[in-house]
Length: 58
Image 1 (spheres, rainbow, N blue to C red):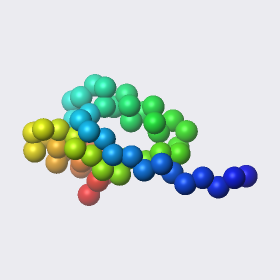
Image 2 (image 1 turned 90 degrees about the vertical axis):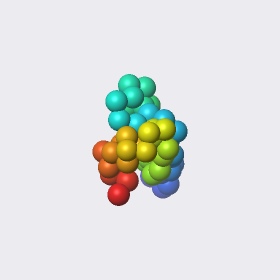
Image 3 (image 1 turned 120 degrees about the horizontal axis):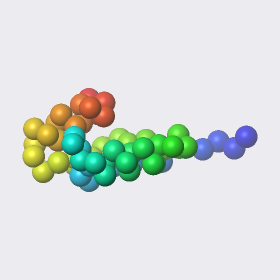
């Protein structure tokens, strides 16, 4: 079986309470070959921090 490295992605927008963000994350994660590693998830700093925590960014 071939070895594949996961595609490392960052996301702009799509944080907490953003409908389309969750749909995109679901789609790129379907085959398990991609991982979200960073993002500018909201223009509101508090929402961005909470969104990062929701997605286990640290």
